[in-house]
Image (cartoon, rainbow over all chains, first blue to last red; front, side, top):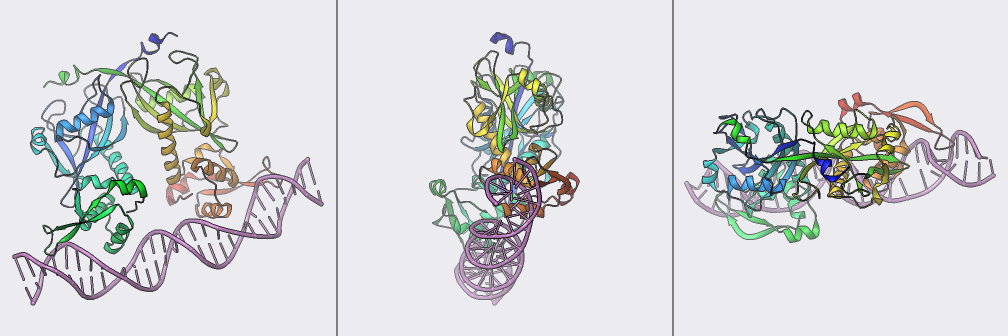
Length: 227
Length: 227
DNA sequence: TCAAAAGTGTTAAGTTTACACCCATGA
DNA sequence: TCATGGGTGTAAACTTAACACTTTTGA
């Protein structure tokens, strides 16, 4: 069979990307959701998405879409998977590849987000979402949780400097369960890559809390992570 | 923006599925690979694949492709992910979704496999594969290992009745490490869903070994799995 | 002076690992 | 009778979980 016939005769599809964007604010995990002011499904809540173009990889399309919404580059992203049911999009047949992103809630472009009609929503109080976006969110949440428990990816949700209380609250939000403070701090002190700095955070308590930083080089050497 | 313009103007792509088919034979994990007797890349090794059609979901396409090769229905499959680099397929732009399947090596249609020019290959001695199929295999292997360690999916690689030595050898192949026989059996006896049967397997030893069976109902009740 | 968050060790319970010999059978 | 794989328990090491009080400081 000649090469050109191998492909020809097969159908082609719109391929989209959809982004599950996690943020950590006020001790809660949030998702950045769009209130769609465009058709189809205008007025309903959805994930931020876009179509893959001919000159970009699927991963690059996801990065582009995230950048268009938040202004951010170099964001931690993982592919969640392909969603390919025939009727998943009510308009046309679209195969979508979902990605989740972890962003530091202080760093993004608020105007750009506003102009897209996007809002942070508590992950435990999500509105109804269009299409199969709920399935995407659930799968992303599971993957994110599992990932955060095996590698120090959760730090992408924090500012560069953070207190141990912040870190604990973050992991409590990720795992959906509370933790013992002393056991938590014991585990942190076993991880050499979580470095004490000279900074004190006085914004959250009168006494002030020591601030820590994640040191990637040390992590790459030790690879020890357990929270 | 009217609905029809939302999609129009975006490019469309061939979407393929590729299957990483695991089997367990002679104490080794194997993959079922195709020696391609068709273009492109005729003569080279590849995964079994095919194109998604308009009337089927991506998951269904993967099931169809697996059935075409092995004759099997109702096989355990998991999506590995979408592979979408611009140049991943040397012929045309194709976005591929990879799946892994776990099959009992006794059950498939050998003639059908032969007619596709497919062969079982030790997973630790794989040949060079076309395109990005090596990446797919690596990701599938990682996922399969992780999955097999958290849920009793590995049993899909065994016949319905199996001995504890078979089970241990399987998990040793999956994890790539040997295990202590007494500790292994202790763990098995903690899992109520691994049921003793009356059958004795005399084919592998003179003394004969008791055969066990996995009981799905008990697993669903207890959800206890640790190997 | 007191409310609010930061910080700090010990012990018991549970889990994991290491380890060696006898059994049954067919060739 | 002996080679081959089947089958069995215990103790030490390690890991995890439970638990409560003192410190600092700004309002």
